[in-house]
Image 1 (cartoon, rainbow, N blue to C red):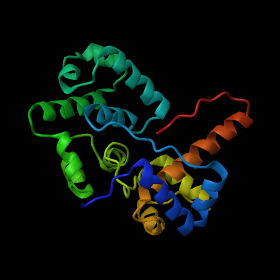
Image 2 (image 1 turned 90 degrees about the vertical axis):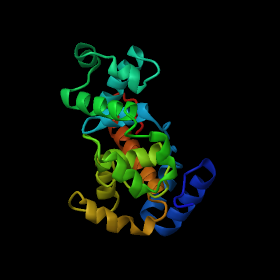
Image 3 (image 1 turned 90 degrees about the horizontal axis):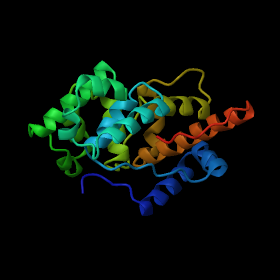
Length: 223
């Protein structure tokens, strides 16, 4: 096998490895326990959801995705392309994300992209294929690798939640750049996707704690 796929069984192995290698991750695990595995079904609908999550809050993206689910079911390329400009704007897509989503749908229908074949490819092959599409960059690919294809060593080094968590946990004076995150994460190999989930767990738990302290009612958002 040219890549490792996360399962419920080896997820525990990854956590055990990370706790033994990195005291900061061990402290997160001690304080907050096992993070959710946070998986999504591979396919068109999940890629649309990730596109919606680009550079906006998870809550905002989820609201748009929920309206899309209420409008077409299932979320397929064919049904998505039947939505006209007025409908898709009412759902909440920006003009830019409308273009990205339609380009994705058209590529699948034209046979230029076979999402089912990605599961047999290594991470860099997946990255090369998906990044050919307008609107899909490294962050989108990394999240798809992590959550849909379940790759154990994917590292979304451009993810804001991960960046902020690393800054806090590692007591850095500045937000780490992607190259710095790569260096920090070297000891997490081959379980960087599991480390990411631990750090997301920390980030979300700390944020919820702060909101409760300030008297806000909050519903924790999952990645």
